[in-house]
Image (cartoon, rainbow, N blue to C red; front, side, top):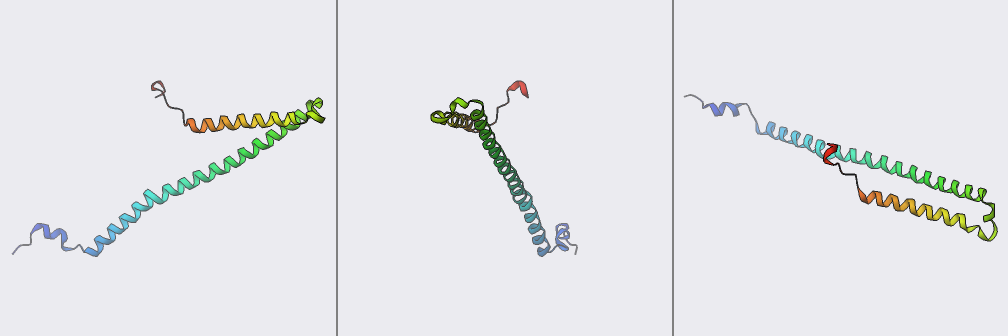
Length: 116
């Protein structure tokens, strides 16, 4: 009696080996599709946060330098008018902050059909 051809396919195969292959495939897929993108996202967030800290520190130092420059350039603003340079810097900081927030909520610029 001859063995049917479909049984030859399964003759050397074991269920355990198939389950191990499925498990390995699943683990590889899980690492490739979830773990690696999360690592990339973490790196992106870390560099973004570090850059934001540096830019914020630079903005504060720049505004402080501008305040000192106003105080040095306009000695007439001493005494009872000494609050005016501080007001100018606060207004400038609020304008810059508003522009940053507006740019954040505006999102990325959209490409027009001519840019493609």
